[in-house]
Image (tube, rainbow, N blue to C red; front, side, top):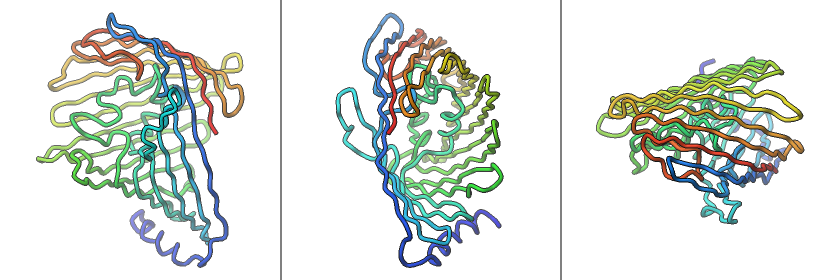
Length: 340
């Protein structure tokens, strides 16, 4: 059965369910991640508390599901960023994610609202440090988390309609996304992701295209993989983003090794650019260690070094001083992460 037909059947399946829900759930969840970070950019240094995290950015949210019967369910997800270092709620807006969805065990999920785009998951999932902290894979991605030259869809999009494949497809997973611009340049987006996960192997590819007006488009293409050998888990990902003649290529290789009750993490990534930013390249080296006190609480430390070339001015995360063209950046952090 085609994906398009499967999407159409989701609504019909829901209508065929019983009038009264059989069960429902509501969960309050969150993540608090704080660390002390020391960072430099060129000759300028800065020490501060970073709420951006190492494992995950700090957030609070609510999610719930209602079982409609016959394999159908409705779900919602509201997630907001928070500032645990000051107690501020960042306006308590649900900009991290705000979605409602209709799911069927056989035909998949139809999801509406603000959510992650396809490219985000490859950049985040296939890196030992994820996208945050001094070792985050996003540190040398131009324009992160929005995109290049006024685009806004590299990691998230609003007004999005998304379809997700059902879970029982022998390890195959995927999604299709479409977001309609509402008076915001660089927000009219279409993309998709297809992957395969079986045992220790996980591999996926994604593509996205955003209309920038005037016939110009912002494009992202990503490929990522991981393999867990138990004695070491290997990661690799590649991102290409382009608009007009301007392109950036970012490649990463990394590993996570069980050591002494925790995990040593290391990664190397390189960014190259062409077009008007030709030669503004960069490399990042990162090393870290995590130690789990429980399933929900982790102590960690990490250090990273970014070597900028040309006029590149990438820095090691949120606490770092403003980047200096051609100058290197260093970062070190120690912190604690707790999920609930």
